[in-house]
Image 1: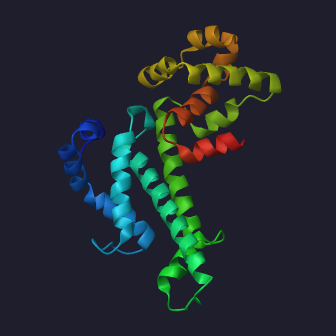
Image 2: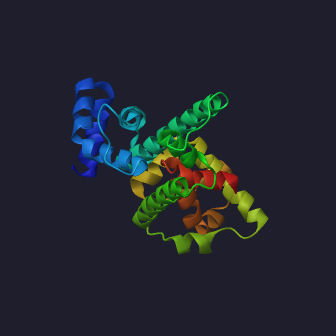
Length: 236
């Protein structure tokens, strides 16, 4: 495997060069087969398993949609692959349900059982996939936080406790997200642009500094491809 910087260069070249894209896909076929095997629980068979074709398409879509501020490319691609396969199984389940209105489901129909099994809300396999994806995303997020000298415990200790302070932090976050150059500065310098954020949001510099670690953590979650973490933040 190439280093992270070289891989990013390859991805950007593959965005506009089909030959470069084909070369990158061939280079990472081992990764793509491993991603497919997570869902099949066995090695995929080319020309037989539709999942492998879906994974290849998802990887190419990841190449086209990737930007440097979305975190490590392979982690970004892995999340796109997961989402594509989940959509595929959902569609297959719908078709299976329609068919079952006309035909009895046989116990030996392993494909139908597999789809039902993956889609059932209490299904252990699907829950394991989600747990694994969440764990990988959290580990990557923790690694990036450490680049800013921040740990998860720092973020927890640094959260605003009062509603007035929370509203002030929200103004800062909104200002940052509406001014992408500030986000670029954050990723480039590994420092929160406090003066600029204070001026744009109308928030006191001391308040921003006091909750700097919390603000950095939330902004990182929204400037990179952390879909699971971001979903939790939206819910909260």
